Image (cartoon, rainbow, N blue to C red; front, side, top):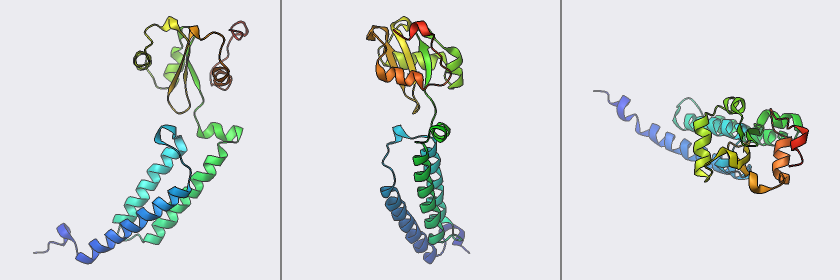
Length: 185
């Protein structure tokens, strides 16, 4: 009775273990020289690179017809392309392709439902986030900014004039044109 389908050949397991260890070490070394970012700071390009790297590591380790060298070249190529894409983020036009722009979800105590919809958020999503931040009335809020990395910045009406960093976020946001009369607030 052939049990190869269940346990394989002993040399295949050693080959798989060696390729897995080598591609893992290659990934560690390659990522070590790459950018230092946390998961909370990931952009679209970071996520796409992570998924692709996972696929390459998994395929290289398990596919009998893929060599370590092929996997390593693909892995290192992705790391280089990711680095180039990260540098491209500093270009005004290319950066907008890689990063979401800030969206103003609440302005002067009024929920902007069209912006919620564009962000794929419901009123309930917004209200839950506000409650978690200790905000229990929309009227208390001057602005809620949906940041490019997916977090919310809440500016209360008691903050006085619009703080500089909030103004910069508003100026660079998508779908926002504040009436001139409210700019001095």
